Image (tube, rainbow, N blue to C red; front, side, top):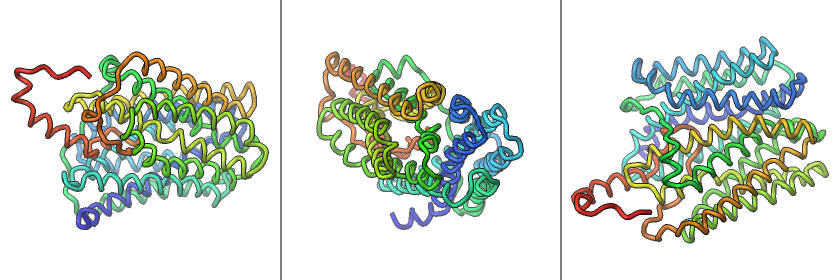
Length: 428
């Protein structure tokens, strides 16, 4: 394992730098857009544009990799993303920024896919789960630092945009100098909505709901804090508290969902998120402590919901459907994250800052009710068919190939193939 991590160290460093820069950029643009007087709807469209580009990148960036190779594709995409970060400051125009965010989303999707396919290729069947855990820790720590970097400069100036560009550019260095062998060409992500809903309607609706609610949070959560009258340091602390709390809750909630009917945990977490959102809406403006505590409570329940939905879908999927199913669920999350940053800001514009978390509360409450309906309509997955929860980042479809369950399912398929000729698979 130590040898594998040493081999992957350059790629993990590149991922850390890239994720930190991308995390800073998203929050910075929301804050700067508010400073420049953009409407909340336009600020939300910045996140919608990002995820629209992200979905396109998941679909088409692999073709670029197949044509020119991993390092050249990474260099091109990182260069474009770095230039895009600086271009924002040259023309303060909301429509232009939305276009730039779409370009950034496309590039980032490709960059993540390259790194994750590379990491997956280097990992072995024996250490794949531990490698994914290290990558997840890299992702979470980088996302936290990216939020905290907002407090080191003035969002109304040029410096933080330069920091974003520098970080994305620096991510090139470890990739260009790594000695790790280039992996096989990566696959693009496809979205078969009908198949996903047939396998697990709850997971499909869950990913859309998480995208719609959390997408709005990422789009204007920072603006929510600004509109309450807090300073930039508090903005950074609020966003970081949600990330850190979400990181802390992944494993205990995931392990708990392995022990009981996972749908019960999904419903309970959705209900808790609805309650914590409502409490944050009511108390966030009272004090910095209440704001940070409320942000942590929201992150604790909201951030693991995507992983819980993914795990539930895997419980009901056939072995050979694992990677394609999860890639499709990621794109459903992206679709929700295109819609949520449009609806959430419009509601906040009409009803005030606190309306953002009333909106997320309604989304999660509706999802919890839908979960209860599904609970009554369908039997639970048997314990022997239940997959282990694995925390995965919402980075690219390539990350799902690193999940050890994918390898186990592949082996199970190969082992059971002769028997499958005479026996139809049991309906789940």
